[in-house]
Structures are given as structure tokens and as C-alpha cells.
Image (cartoon, rainbow, N blue to C red; front, top):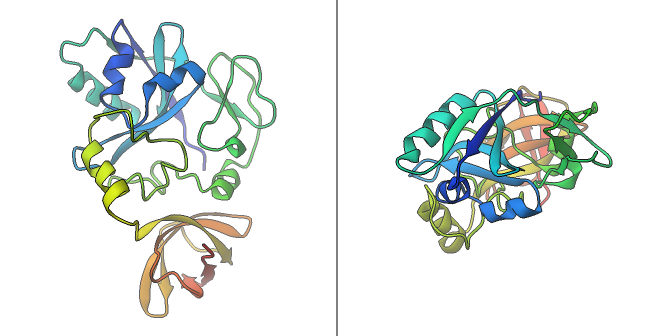
Length: 244
């Protein structure tokens, strides 16, 4: 499954400053290419993840189409007196692997995820789910849900959060998880023998050890309780093993 995308445009003299106070990553990184980031609830839970894209004086937001209307509403709500305009565009997102064409950008989450283009570049076919599983990259509506904490979803590893940039919505909870607790649960790659429906419970003996999500080529992305994820586990007839 590969999600459809929408592209929003944030324009105006305060576009960068406006987004800097809302998203999990440092918008200044746009000088080097795409910035992967998220918007959170005040309680620190996931609302949307997206790519920020430099486009002249404007900033584009490449987001899952299912999340775009809510994201645009949120941005408009936070706009207040900021000198910005937020609009949907008809820009198409293209993707491919191998050398990126001129004007395209390497996916900042993991180089195995290829490149992304916004200027009509010709995309290429790939098994994107297999690539996501290999790099343990979560997707909205599958591994990323309204109950997700982004550190449990690997956003630090995926270059989606910056701990030095200052305040943003949900920052306090995210910082506390980083500095004051050891993650006991989270997304991880597992070995899978057989297959199971996405969302199947993973059992270690009679105890629930997590949930199995996207699977490809003998591997899968799972949300695990690390203290229970030991040895051979089962998920609706499939055998699951986690090797840290």
C-alpha cells in the first residue's frame, strides 16, 4: 500500500517562522533539502507527518491525502496574525529509486526510500512497502495512528524531530520521553514466517507482546512491548521473532 499525497503551499514573509513554532523538526534544514516532520496534539500524540519542501520563497507540505484537510484546518487555526497564506495545490508527488533526477530530493528518513519530486519528474516503480519494512519506516493510517508517540515510532532515527530547536506543539511531552524515560514500547522490524492480517496481536505465550503491521519478504514492522518480545512469538498463525 502506497498512500496518495496532497501538496499544500505555505507562502508569505513569515512562512518559515510560522512553521518553526508548530512542527517537530527544524525548518532551517530546508536549505539542505527536504525536512521530515510531524504535527502533534498538545498531549504529544501524532496528528500528521509530512515533508517540508523548499520552493522558492514558499514552503510546500507533502502530506498523506487523507490527512491534508485536517492539517490545512490546523495550520489555518494557528495562523492568527502571522503573515502567511495556506493553500492546496495541484502539484503531483513523484517517487523513485536510484539516482535522483534534477530538482528531486533524497528522502531524509532513509536513503533506501529513494527520492521525491515535485516538478513533474518521471517516477519509477518500486515495492514501497518492502522498502518501508526494510528501513522500518511507518506510514500514516497503518503504523501511525492518533495514539502514536513519535519517539516510539522511530522519528529520531528517521530524522523527524529536533531536540534543540525550541518549542512546538507537543514538545514538552516529547522532550520528557527523550530525557526522562527509557522507551519500553515502540516500532521495530521483526522476522515473520508466514503472514498475518495487518493489526494482528503478537502473542508471547499467553501474553500480548505487541501488534504486527506491514509485512514483506519475510520481515515486518511491529509495535512491541520490548520486555515481552522474546523468542518465537505468534500472530494469527504466523511466527514472529524480534532480534534487537
